Image (tube, rainbow, N blue to C red):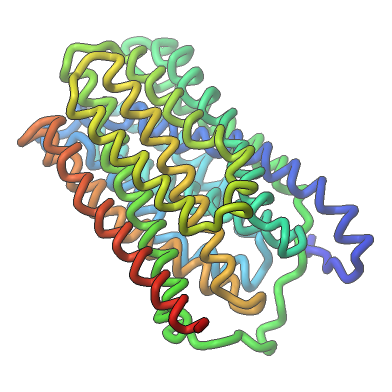
Length: 403
């Protein structure tokens, strides 16, 4: 079934609320995919890996899947429409659960890594929900639409960890085997929800594609948006990847790690109810800077101790910082392109964000194994300073150009 073109304001208004409701519900279910992977992959990797330094490799492969699939997902959306991209993503979501279950049953570390790659592909498509939301509302409400869909992640912050907690021991002695089956079922339900999404039809291939990508990529606004998105997600991923395993290595329980991730994901999405309004009031760059400062506080909390409270405070502040940083950066991306440029610019942005995030993901396991949790937190601080300086410099350039 092809996507319909919304040619009149009345028709667009009729579909707006339905589309947003479906995208919010899909974000709630599909967002649990990443939470489940982050909560379990390090523990499974530590059990199955031939070398303990490779314990977080499955999470790094997850990030590689995100980076590798952002551009193909954008190409599918441009050619066939966003709904086709969404359904392919949920197929990957089913595959990650089924393959991961088999990998646990067989004790195969490398098969488990292959499973998390599909999880990354699913996550790449899920992150395009925020841009899809921006397409179904007028320009003055785009930041709020992005925030509304991201707010669906609050439910994901509960669904993911609670699903892990209540299913991880259902198939003894195979820890998390039942969890991954439940994950596959959740992705299948998400596909049914997304099948009803109706968005504006993609433009014909012969229509204008706007400015060259290289010209857009050199614009100060886009540079600042990419830097903000890269650093916000890279540091969040670096610390969050290490935290569950670090908690176990510090003698804390899996339930403590699950609850910590639950509060982290809730903190990632709960501010979304107001983030759009805050961006409209103060501007996206200022909101991004506030997020970077909160992330620095998260690293400082991690350096201050290794109790349950210290880990939970770190994860909560990390989630709040990511919300302001990433949603603010997403709003800046939307403002940096024309309508006909949206798919290539958004896909290129996500490719850069997740491609560079791979570095942090691969580094986390080695840093934690070789130098401990404190080094992970120390390493997070310099990139945050770089991002703040970049925002200040590009902001000064915009002011000069306007003058």
